[in-house]
Image 1 (tube, rainbow, N blue to C red):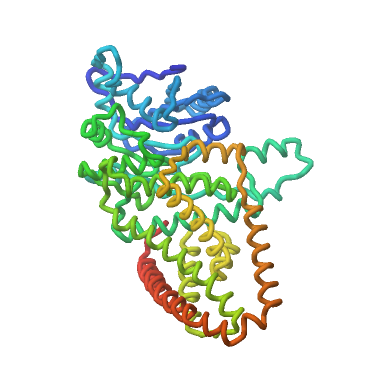
Image 2: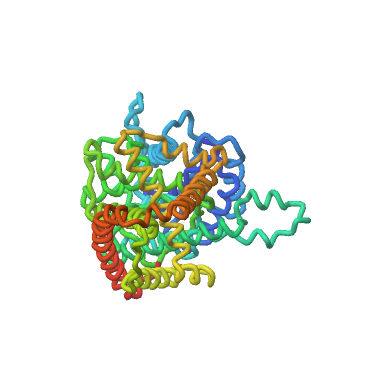
Length: 498
C-alpha cells in the first residue's frame, strides 16, 4: 500500500459509497484520463466515491501519476500494489476485493475491525473499470440508478463506444513533441481510424441486439460495469472462491456474469450510460484480442468442467452458427465461381442481387445508428467494402479459435494480446496477402493457358453435377442468411440507441 485515504465516520454511521476497482499494468499514459472521467461524474445524492487503483506489477510511473491525478482532481484515491501476481487482471481485481473483505486463504485468522465492518457496509456498489477506459459525463449516476432500480440486479454494464483517434495529419512534422504525441495513442492514420469504426459498428450491432431482447447481457464487460457487492459475495460463497473473479477462462468477466445469472442475479446493460474504450488499431492487435475473446467464449460453451451456463447460451451458439454459415457461403463462392468460369458454365442471375441489397441496407442502418460516425463510414457501409473486409478478419479468427479448440491447443490469450499491443510480435498479414495474390494470378494464368482443355465437352460433363450440387447448397445457405438479415433489420426498427 503506497497511499491510503481514510474516510471519516461520524459515530456509528458512515455515508454510502461506490468503490471503483481500476487494475492498471503499466498504464502511465492513460490512468489520468481514466481518473479525469471519474472526476467529471455527478454522484448520487449523499453517496461518496472511493477509487482503488491496483498497480499490478508496474515498472513505469503508473503509481506516481495516479497519486498526482488524485490530488489534482480532489479524488479519494487508494493505491494498492500487487506483489508476485501471476493472474494478471483477475489477480489484481481479487487483490482489491480482499483488501476490503479479507482473504480466505490467509494463513492467519482474519478479524474485521468494527471500523472496517462499517466501511464495508457502506459500500453499496463496486465499479469495475479498465485503466484505459473513460466514463462519459453522468454515466456513473445512470449506472447507479439502473442498479438500484431492483433488488435482484447484480450488475449493470455501460454501453461501450470505441474512441476514434485524431487524424495523424493534424500533427505538424515540426512539432518537437511529434513522436511523443504519436506514442500517446491519441492519433492514428486512416487504417487505424478505419479499424476503430468497424469495431464501433460491431459493438453497435451487439448492443442493439441485446436491447431488443430486453437489455439482459451474457457478459458484464470489465471496462465499465457497476456491481452489487452482495451479488459478488454470493458468487464467492456459492463457488468457494477467494474472490469473485477467476482465471479459469480468458474471459473472466463473462465467467463471472454466468455465475451471477446462475445465482439468479440479473445482468443488464444500461440504456443510457456510456463508457469510452480504446480500440485495436491494427489487424494484428485486433486478431489477438478477438482470439482471446472468442476462445474464452468457445471454452465456456464447450467446457463442462467449468459447470456454468447462461440464459443466452442458445443465442451464443447461434452466433457461432452464423459465423459458420458466412464462412461456408464464401468458401463455396470461391470454389464455384472460378470453376464455372474456367469451364465456361457461369450464368448470371439477377436474384443474386437480393442478398447483396439486404446486406447493404443492414450495414447502412447499423452505420447510421453507430455513435459519432463519419460520412466515409456510411458510404463504405453501403458499398459493403468495409463490412466484407472486417468479416473476413473475423472469419480468420473463427477458424483459428475452433482449430485450437479441437486440437486442445490452449494458448495464453492475455499474453498474446499484450505482446501484440506492445509491438513485441508481428502478424503475417503481408505474407498472407502476397500468397493469396500469387495463387490468384496462378489460377488466372492456368485458366487462360489451358482454356481449350477446361472448356471441352468431357470436362464440362464431369464438372456439371458438382457445380449443380454446389449451387443448390449455396442457394439454401444464402436464403437462410438473408432471412436472418431481414429479421435483424426488423429488430432495428425500434428506437434503441447504441
